[in-house]
Image 1 (cartoon, rainbow, N blue to C red):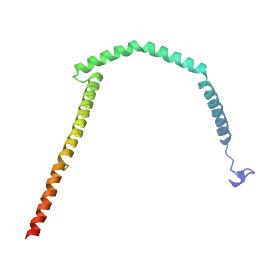
Image 2 (cartoon, rainbow, N blue to C red; image 1 turned 60 degrees about the vertical axis):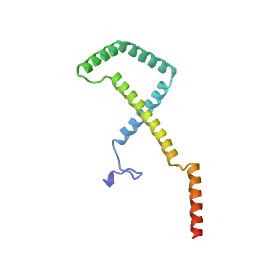
Image 3 (cartoon, rainbow, N blue to C red; image 1 turned 180 degrees about the horizontal axis):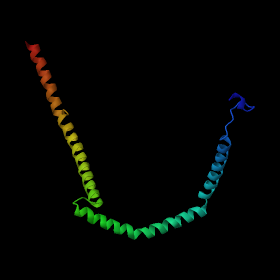
Length: 136
């Protein structure tokens, strides 16, 4: 195979020319598509087609939703609206529990903090105890 090497020291590859042609072709198409897609005319045309498609499919989608709702009811399964309602209720319960937890934390903090009168009692009890020790 060394006798088939080109003058630049690389081995001859018959598919290299096709690869180069493919790459050039793909680059040209990519540039053309970028220019086309970024134009105002393309945006307007695609918007009109999308609008027409959505307008056309709207009645079919509504019929499909009604049929699906009836099928779910017959199978005793929740609909999308039922699941959303349940999720909202769960969120409300969770928020209320968080509020109750915060209130209980505040109550616990108030109960565990020594009050000013407790501190005064402790100080007077300590001074009385030290006086009694000194009297002995």
